[in-house]
Amino acid sequence: MEIITAKDLTKDYDGFRAVDRVNFTIVSGECFGFLGPNGAGKTTIMRILYCFMPPTGGEVKVLGHDVTKDPSLVKSRIGVMPQDDSLDPDLSVLQNLVVYARYFDIPKKRSSVMAKDLLGSVGLSEKMNANIRSLSGGMKRSLLLVRSVINDPEIIILDEPTTGLDPHSRQMVWKRLSELKAQGKTLLLTTHYMEEAQRLCDHVAIMDRGKIIVIASPQELMDRHGGNLEDVYLKLTGRKLEN
Amino acid sequence: MKIKRAYRVWQRHLTVYTKLYLSSIALNFVEPILYLVALGLGLGGYITEVQGRPYINFIAPGIIASSSMFATVYECTYSTYVRIFYQKTFDAILSTPVNIDDLIAGEMMWGATKSVLYGIIIIGTISAFHLVDSALVVLVVPILFLSGLIFAEISLFCVALVPGVDSLNYFYTLFMSPMFLFSGIFFPLDALPPFVSKIAWFTPLYHLTNICRSLAAGHAAQAVEGILWIIAAAAILSPLPFHFMRKRIVR
Image 1: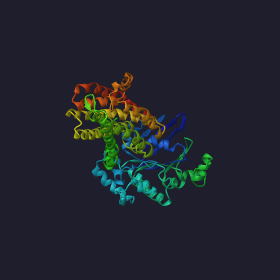
Image 2: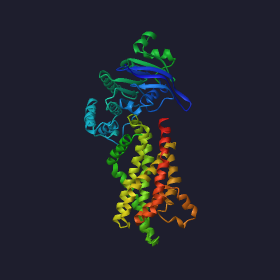
Image 3: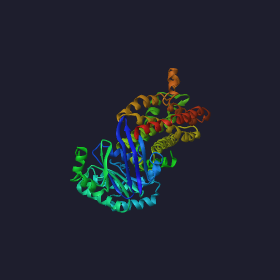
């Protein structure tokens, strides 16, 4: 079942075209990756999908709803893990989850139970009452990840979920993402790590300068163009992916 | 805009505030009391009476106005700025069902709430020191919510426009300080050339000061013009923060 569709999606910022007439379809339960260097337009697409900003042109439907017409409805059914640390430093670890859940009208009784479960699943139970500033980078990422699923979303949008993490923390995030996928969640992520795309994604869209060059499964791409994803990227764009 | 979603934002601020209120109360509460003591008693030792009242009684109701104003303006300039650009709180909230208009409405409601909160503290304090003549002063409380909305609207509008946090200093130096000094809190404006009170008529603090002083003295009728001004200004300025914040944040 198609869960996200974008038709001729375009986004301009002050005369600069960040996303240029892209088309893609994402089906329920898959993990879809946007692959490309910084500035390729990945984050912009994510922000449009989670209704942070409207597209300049084209049509985007998430769960059957137009993102410009029903943003609250769309946002109530998706989870977002942003690229930046947007945890609330004025609140404790547990409060971060409970206050966030409140924006979804989840009552405190229920969100506290859910939050404690989720913190346990990423090994943060002992940090429940800790200050956000006392968390390590990896812990913050884990907290952002569990915050994004507090509303039990059908789709989870992850903008560079492992950028800046040490190899161990990265493995932890990958493991958690695989679990979410096994639960039937649709995952949408951006990355500039080939290994991440190869390991997690059913389909990848290779992006360069606001355009999607190709959409296929990582295996298909490697079969068609030879070598690993890194080589494929170099062949298709003439550039290296990692900056 | 949905009131319930704006209320969620307001609730977030209340949650944070109840955690940190001690440090913030000192900032907003101690300062006005210092003004009252230093000017009321210090300067009041030389000026025996203003408009038929001891000087400290003359300035006390004005401190309700200025204290509530500063509580809102600090909240909706520096604190809002930090939430948007440093803490990314807006980004987090906007990825939930709360939309930008709900968020701005929540910021305004919270800013106005702070006006009410700090106004009540000052009303209580000056009443305890017998600096208020009439119980009508409690009617100031609902008006503080409306004047708080005006100060929140102006502050959020500035935050939406400034290129960096330092530029907020212009707002304080060029707008807040003159408004504070020439609001009629510390001296009646009729002692100055008439154009001063003409300019002051266009500022919210001038009217709020008049309202506080009239009600504290028990002259309700004298507060009417100011109240109408406050209601009108709150309504007229309301599109400003929504329009400019939408432009700044969502693009």
